[in-house]
Image (cartoon, rainbow, N blue to C red; front, side, top):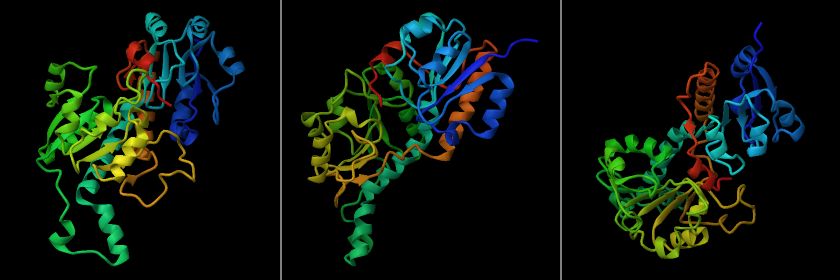
Length: 337
């Protein structure tokens, strides 16, 4: 009788409800010797005991080169969040033929859908009209829409063209938008094949009525949208920040939005949860949400489906097809939380 492969399931901060439903548990138990730990990251003792035989690690377990050396059977590390943490030797994993995978593609559709909602709410002044209605100061018809504008036939800019942007493009197609993109990691020709126009940073900031900030944070781009760059954003444009707060000078971003240089929707913050006494918790022109854009039950189902598909592939010695593979240089530069 062949020995089952060992899988270490260490998904914190994902919970059992998110990634370890009964069907997942049953199938993993059927196909593997399963070691699980929930509520916090697995302790050193569990990880070290698993290393000699582990074939797949699911989670954000620390895997520097020294640990990879002690895991001769390891085939894949599956991060069930949508980020890359600097706790894996990505180059060594690639050298050894170990797949390092992220669930980022599973979250992108829900975030993209939220982006459309934020954009329309900002452009149409939905939040302001709601507040006026509660105060009894609302106006009807065109008088209540005097400062509104439409997403249809608009100029739209993306900063970053990863999973999220690629999920957002088809949702914008019915609106007949002209989309320009700044992404220094991608070639102009590649972006053109995706139906978007490659531009420099200053152009994407200054020429679009809608701006979606979709890039992850790295050691090279932290705070790159500083005051000088943010002031290039077109007057009264709608700016949607849903990727990582660290890519902008956050206090300046908020201050300019409060002063109505542009309209803003913000789903991510430098510190989460946001402290109860935070300056952001006040009457505001900004549409704030609490990092909820991708947090739907359907997103977690996508994670489970993609994870299980790729586990089946990997255990058959086939390449994974659903999750995103780490590119070592990009992954090691990332500064995700």
